[in-house]
View (cartoon, rainbow, N blue to C red):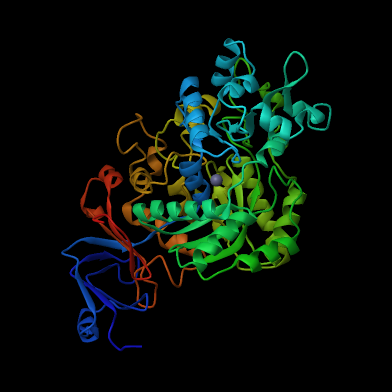
Length: 554
Ligand SMILES: [Zn+2]
């Protein structure tokens, strides 16, 4: 090893995220790590073979960390699916599927979407069942496309017949298989009944690696150098590891293993979880997490809120019959048991919780685990969309991470839906980030792409966290204006707080001697512009372990 550094960056404005020394101008890097940030020392470390880059005053900061991104899924959607977007008409959907059919070998099942009830009604107006409508597009390819909630599927005859669906119409899932007037499956399947066609949607290793490349490119373009995969199945774990072995991951990935799924409702045993963790670990891939679901989502009224939903003409029970606990996916006793055993086995548990009753139940579960032992593992409430007043201090007390995702802390297309379902006052209490910070909560950022948002862009999220308004004015008004935080607080959430959730607070998330040289060069000075303009930030270069992995000029 040479005494001199490999690379030196000088003359920049480095927002280090190191609280002891928040600003610097230069750094020296050797073997992927920062070895000095002291100007005089750096001069001495600059040898004949040291590459020197003059940053010309540009703004530099640590790479961003997305703590909830289904990145492989998002990339597969971009590459292989007939994804038509949320505003598509029935003919857009038909064209999207037909184009995919055209481009795909018959051995590959066609998937994509999303469809919604409007599409189903439009198909009925044509005098067709969903199955017949899809059969008109192809009888050679199996087709199964998902709805906006991803809890239902629409399938053609080839897929339904291969799944022997007709044999199941009197079985235990019969209420989840829709029938035509002759008693034949009409092509619409819900929840567990979708498993029999979902099994046909598979990707070979080559396709999965292709998705892996697409994923890293997308994240690097946004300046993201570390992420948490919130719901990994064995195939995903294998893909991350293989990419890493090929030297192509260039990201820190922390995976939360899905303990159960619609395809495999039986929960994995602790032994099976540990086996997956040991099998698929590699230098940049850390499968040390587990994912559990505590409730559903607000639009389908399956999120567990303390107080009833606003009733409407067609759905919703009378307020006095509302039972929040009935919406919890697990009883308190089951959750306490799962958390206790996963905590003892060393897994970080991420719990999907949208409603305030669900995050409350998650905190109760963590409290139960803490009574057995203090493992020091910071478990996570995923989404943390709504929190009841008495729970704010419990995040710090129980060493629990409040992950905020997706970006609903400023007005979006979903805001009006939230107001309808929850009432305006409650909808305005969405993502109480400032109050959580005031109570000492450890907050991380997640995009939840592609489950809930069209892209993984973090910059619009940073801007919206400060202003609580849509940074580009696409949707009017604000969400909980008093919950806005300052730039310094927001950048900490997107960097060093995320590092801690990856168990890497001693090596990433800050520009500091001894830390890995993961950093980004930006086109503007975040601290010198109006907050809304942060949303327009363009990453010029992204570096991972001192290597330039994205350059806008190339
Ligand atoms: Zn998610």
